[in-house]
Image (cartoon, rainbow, N blue to C red; front, side, top):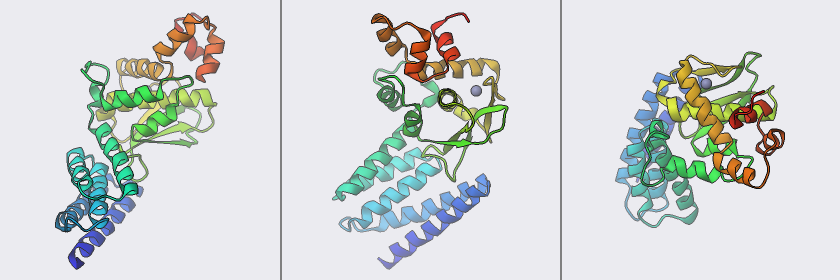
Length: 275
Ligand SMILES: [Zn+2]
């Protein structure tokens, strides 16, 4: 038991150091420290007696969340599932179920989100459906459910928003979206949708940071920007709801823009209305 305690304490110390390195912007060092923390926590979780609860589930949950932090979804799933076997206290069980969903989301092949029609809905699509059933779409909620942290910041005059890997304060996916705090709400919502689209479609191309200017141009090529815009529009203004409203006579772009809480020019573009 003393050994387990020692292993766990060492894991937590390494984890703290990893967070400090991440805060200082030292991603590589931070990843290395998290990986070492994971090793220690796995040793602790593997050596805990089966009937020692809640210690056993706490250690498994901890190992799973450290693994998730460094994008090791396979390891994370292994430890969350092993942890859930046994007499887990109810509240812990709930927390572990949430963590399990986050792992599933990250494990989902987001790049193929729109290209490959799966037989059943992927976790990403299930989540997206949940958040896109009524207008206005809870776009910040969707971002968080996908494991993204959303923050506001003074990004200056020329930047609408950005997305970047963030091991310090990022969501479970390890990424943070920042929107320009001086923008009106409808524009902020568009920016969040746009950055979610980059995350889903171009996550593997975001290196240090992907910055979108006022025209939603970034270091990505214009074809990818168009793809991001298309998905952002679809996330924010789902065709299904637009169709239902159209069927009951709600067709005025201004009213629709208000209902969906999006900028009017964006709704007009979505509807194919010439300005
Ligand atoms: Zn963009």
